[in-house]
Image (tube, rainbow, N blue to C red; front, top):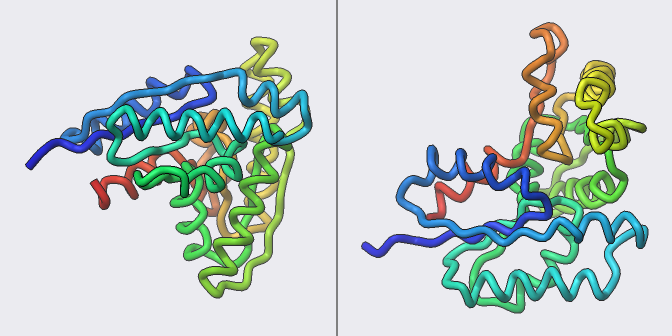
Length: 219
């Protein structure tokens, strides 16, 4: 049996080692390659959303991944999710949004779903995906969203401790109001490990491991 190839499209170089570790552990029989462009999210922030030009660039990366020999494409950034869905039909290779498996798991885990992010450009696409996937599954949900003001700015300024404290406080507060929490950004996953057991009263899902688990059933 020939080996399968997974292409990963990132908008942050920091996610390359995260997914390299996950794929090595969970997809040892699959070859991988990465495409990285960290200007996309910056431009989405500057433009206030996904413009036609940004969507065209996302589509070009997906087409490049397909022509590069990928049997499956995973896009690891939630902010460009809508552009990913729009471009998926342009290639014959399956394309997966990183947050879709996490969203589907949350819909099965509870009715009251919380979504937390440090950027509105990530919070809105993930929240929209939750609503649409719940509707497609025939599930009635209650969605609570939290934008952690100042956390992303602290991280960009090199103050990881402030970022983690702000996200941690928001997670603790949100956990008292929902059945399950989704992290709209993988960068927040490390904060979960710092929480006391009493503060993790509901499941908290991060997209990278659930996405790779899902791909393990396909590849």
